[in-house]
Image 1 (spheres, each protein chain N blue to C red):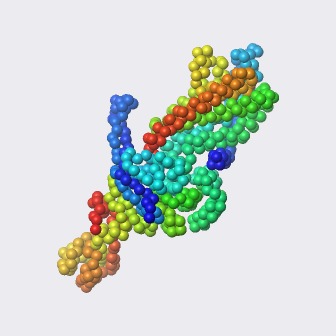
Image 2 (cartoon, rainbow over the protein chains, first blue to last red):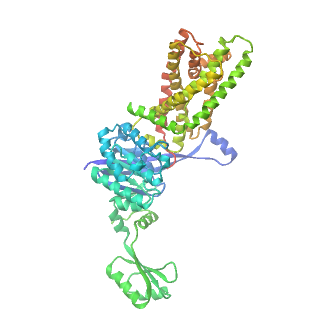
Image 3 (tube, each protein chain N blue to C red):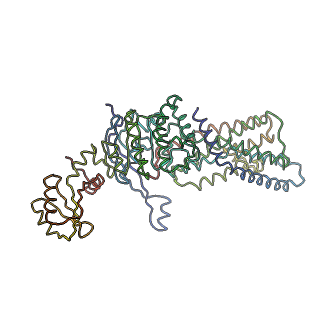
Length: 338
Length: 263
């Protein structure tokens, strides 16, 4: 399988200017400015193979958007090598961008004042798509995204969910082998999200489209991507399967008890002294959470002991969510490898 | 080529979406022309002509200068500035076309729309109210249209320069506004260049601005005759070519230091 994206030692630095204080400082700023060099992307390397769906995650300001912009040829890297679809994105921009599709969740690609279909028609001309191919491909896309009734409406009259589906269709007019999605589901409701996810899976299966997705919504990644690349402060801190990330980090389980009578810490510790349990008080005096190892004997042992001694109103076994895992990783700052 | 024609068409559609703006525009331009007409009637007093232009020629000059302005004038400098400020230029950069050419085509779409829906009806209204002399000479019309095409090119190139400057200045509303005043003044829109003092005329003959308004208006009013027309058109053609150099130079520099704002 060939590499669609090959990034080696990529680096991007920005100059950021700071203003001096006071009136005197403002005058001095007219002539010379103070600046500091900020490294947004710091020496990252990774490769993506054809047909992969990769989630690209990180906190705000971790360097996701900057690296996407370098991969799409918008920004010039300060240092490093990028080969995407066998081309240097920045050097061969016009030829290169014909082979990719891009959706920026926060910026519209469509022309605001004109009907959606006029935008499509213009994009078809821009990408030089033959009539027959357009008919075939777009009919399918329009049907799956269910945007047929929206085509004759101006973009400004569409809701966010409707617009987003149209944006996605617009990015796919030339059926690109590689698709960049920068927060495509931002601000969308669950139904639209599901529809978009289904659609992305479908084109990935049907055309083998490689997809690189950045998002803050981890359920998107869980639903779509087998592999995640995680960024923090411009560096890759994890690159590998999502499953492994979960296994290495979601070691324990939590059991939440809601008692119908008051319980004390000593009492509970005494009850479960055979096992390694960390008790924590929950939202009220009646709620206690036991963190235990994810082993069946331990879990059932703890539940058995506690329920035999005390009356409970409710019982929940919580698995640590991906979101929590990610949060833990950021708090600790590095990834343990298993 | 197809994509450029499509872009002109799209721009046309966009202008049609907001066509009501233009009815008020026609009124404003008519008032402007009217004000200048009365001003010039007062200046002429009883004189036959000033600086080789008769009062009718003068009125025609003013009317034509304003109507030609509707064609060559466009807001692409502001648009570029806005796209840079809002970070929309990122979207433009992932499209497989030369950004500047596409912007120029958008300007052309706007210009053609204004020519048809603004200048022509405007000119008819103005011709009914004020004494204007329209040439019956086919070659004058031909030279005029050739000349306003060059006007469009020169003005758009200057607009592109002002727009691209946003890459370096981040906020250049002041520059754009100053540019507009300089063009209105130095292009001969408000006052024919032959009315300026000799030293100013000398300076302006080395600047591209006279090619924007003065030359097409002088051709239309037949203030230029014979070889003067060819010289004037040649001047416009040279500036159209010459301005390509700074536009592309600045663009290459701008791309190198492109920082997409917001995100």
